[in-house]
Length: 307
Image (spheres, rainbow, N blue to C red):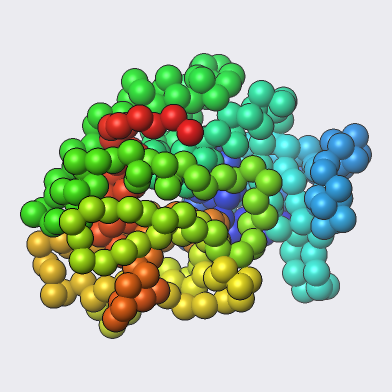
């Protein structure tokens, strides 16, 4: 069965890295094959109602993913795959998620918890490949607590946060709890992928502008005209383009700009958390430095991190 595995979204940034320790990077790798595909009618019928109505099907088989180098043979993994129903005759079934062949309820709990950690910037896709995948294959990830234990052992405290003499950054680090609260206000569970933007006020003392922390579906992240630009679904449920402050006037903050961009780029086709300025004349600007510091606060594990 020919299937489509998108470069963007949950499967390539979460499922594949965790369960098989890889992430595809080339457009031709998106055109994969599910060999020996067998419909799992029991699992398909056990889905939530909206998933059934969406035409999603559970299959068991072996996925073949082309190699980055077209001249070399690809990779094969026995697995369980959730596929969407093609909307047109020319469209291939799209991979919604990929699971190990013998996945269970505990496996899904681990997946959801790690997704929350990724969305909040505590871990990255690279962490899933280099840290969490080995733990997963060793059978060490059975619960949310196990995820936090691995994070605490291998990730927490490894990020050095530098304020770069930025007033907002210094204030955020001196009082990280409001930042952590805003980041933790975002949930994956029971939030539809394309649901309207949600936001939480982000109080930062001794700064010129006011901000909110947004949770929104994003796509088409790029650097253009000296700004980070992206498309999102706004609070009204319609598509809107947002852009950051210009990058070049504050070269000392370039590392923060890059940190925010890399996070947002990795979240293409998914929901992301990022700061937005609400003060004129910069209303609705993506606050990339505030975003980067917030993400690093979460990754470093400082302050009270519990939900």
